[in-house]
Length: 98
Image (cartoon, rainbow, N blue to C red; front, side, top):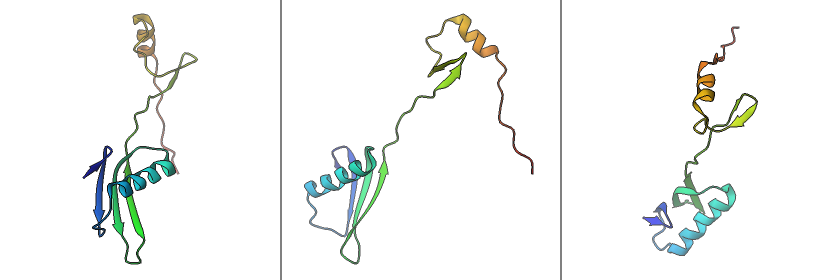
């Protein structure tokens, strides 16, 4: 089932309400400060609840230092600046030899 955009699986608890599920999702969000993609709620043999969750992947922007400036992308650069960046010598990482 899906609750508030989160895929939910409940195992071993037949009478869990949607409010309880929402509370578990909120608890994980508060602990991780990230949106929850999916959550599995299961009853353990000792009567406690086990939570297994997957966080929603977050988009990020790559920041590079080019010509002394921190930039995310070069899509707003003019053709001359793009050509300058393209013609630069790119240095890679070398593996350390033991």
